Length: 255
Image (cartoon, rainbow, N blue to C red; front, side, top):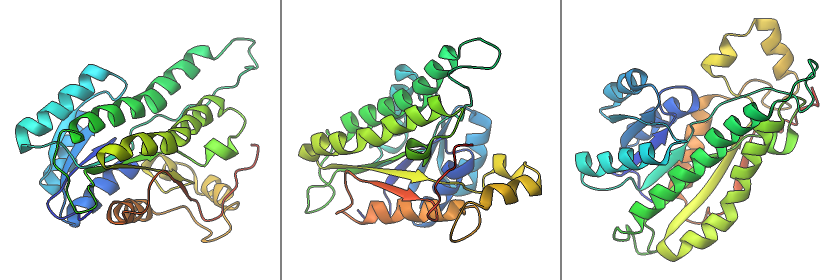
């Protein structure tokens, strides 16, 4: 799918990988919707790329529906490119040392990361199914979800996070098979360790210890590399129903 002039919606688009992706897609000629829980932060990003800022909670169906309706109201059609970057990182043990339980943390992580992704994907697919095909292949749009290498390499304390990302990975193939009838592709990216604002707040020695497990390139991933992969997926029609690890051959240790 050609990016020029297409509407692209990026959830979690006000920070981290989402922000870089929103800015990158705008530079490639897309009209970008920055969807984020923080309206102020989303507005700041949108103003810099002549995009549209919409506040929404991806874990709330009504909020997501209202956001997609607003895109159609403002720009006349639903987004043909949807990139799910919204999510939370949590750390809790199944058996905490204090003798308590972490069920609430698990539930919240699944609600935001997995169910939130499913809600956005469902609402996006509904809108796209009512549009005309964009090209001779009959393609109507592409949905790109964000997992994590933790879906395979979950560390101690990452049970909730790994389970939520594993669910996103498992969605890719059945969703792609189902939505093929209306010309919608579904892909998933599983990033490794990337240089995000959160990572950059860590002391230098901690960052060095983290990157020591990355074979090559032996550094944190650049968010622009994630955004470039999003661009390629959009433009390559044969990429469908697959999960791509973007990790420099990293395999996370138990701790």
